[in-house]
Image (cartoon, rainbow, N blue to C red):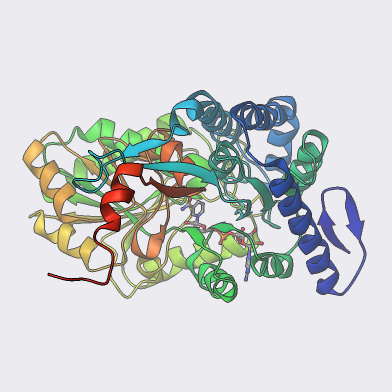
Length: 478
Ligand code: NAD
């Protein structure tokens, strides 16, 4: 059984059936887009509003579905990240759209600007945008890009992850109740469906996920020269300077690292701590964890790993690090036995002094493992970070403004939070995206609107310049 589109279930072994159906939705969306003509502000605001209502009306059911998909997922966290976070982006776009959409006057070449010619940029929708989203924030990573797509006046097709089937099914149903298939369609299915989806001739394609699949997506999209936005991951570093407030930095890192059990593209992956405060920092991590999670197994605030495959992958990282000589500390305040648990929960595990030959050092962790390295001079973390693929996020803790400037000027990442973690991504007015291997393209706020718009350059010639220009046409003479 292959589930194909919003309203239908199609039983077929043949992926081409899925492909044909997806293609027909795309064709119909494109036809409707052309027929619609100008997409006025009221229509865009109405679409954004309907997306908000979907989240509000199904809030409880969505949280249960996400918990079912993860084995267990903190409901408070789901409300904060997937429901609240998505609503905030959609409402922000709705509020600021009027300002974003305004044509921008630009300077015309001297002297024709003074002689009546004019230049401006107008933002035009692109048409139909495809969006392939992952499992870790199954709603936020579909509704977030949607805020940009709908505010820019586009229609959209979304392919959510097969790893969160309950959430994806409910998402499809809820969207179908509030949107015409020609406006917004959700297409569920497995990796093969994703592959066919990436072959469609969209006006733009957004992919959020791992870099291995991103290469396939880009290759497929290149066949029709479909422009892509790639929102990928990587190993996001933290630098804790000597001037940092150790206790509060540790608590913030615990908060950020345990959110969604570390299954966050921006989660701190490895921490460089100044030698002088290393011991105090590790002790502070332990006490902050104990305070936030006195127990883990049945603690509703602690989320499970998505499935057995990822559980095994993470446990292998820990075993490998231990075998190769790292100091491994499992933060398990109630000394619980995790054998035979109904979910795939893993207690936060600190890997201290890891070496480069460990698999945990060479892969994005995407789970509750935190690597800790020490440094004596700032050059060490800066050189280390610059010797590796450019990360999605970078975090600096400290109150030494010169050191902070040094870190900001000499490292590269998609975004930065100073004296906290993750939070730059929660600011709707800040563009979100990666650099280098962590992806390219930006969304959130005005940059999201712009990303999904055609920034059209319009030059209007004046009568006076036309007359003068005629004197300069060939044949040329002295
Ligand atoms: P995933 O396995 O859920 O895959 C994402 C989507 O890609 C799914 O819808 C899936 O069906 C589809 N897909 C898989 N193979 C495909 C193919 N060959 N062709 C077309 N579509 C295909 O997600 P994942 O990759 O496990 O996600 C985790 C990764 O995503 C991590 O690396 C994480 O850092 C990254 N991530 C990035 C962001 C960001 O905003 N930058 C956010 C979340 C996750």
